[in-house]
Image 1 (cartoon, one colour):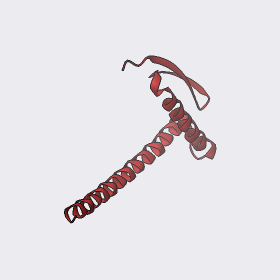
Image 2 (cartoon, one colour):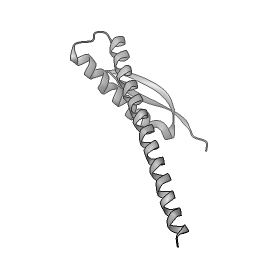
Image 3 (cartoon, one colour):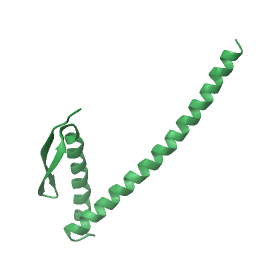
Length: 99
């Protein structure tokens, strides 16, 4: 599929950024920018972190940590699901063999 590249305007911490993005990914990018903006505002407004660069790094670190935790959770769920499917397959095969 040939997807058009378009520019998207994003507002993060009161500044506008123009980013090239595939048309199908625009909504996800906008949501990501909004999430980053919320995280950065929370950091800045806490008063514990000064300077836009430090706020950006700490917000990025928090989001990266959250992503890492979700990846671990996803792997755990995937493993659990696979184990459940193996057990279910065994039960189905047992029932079919004993007919």
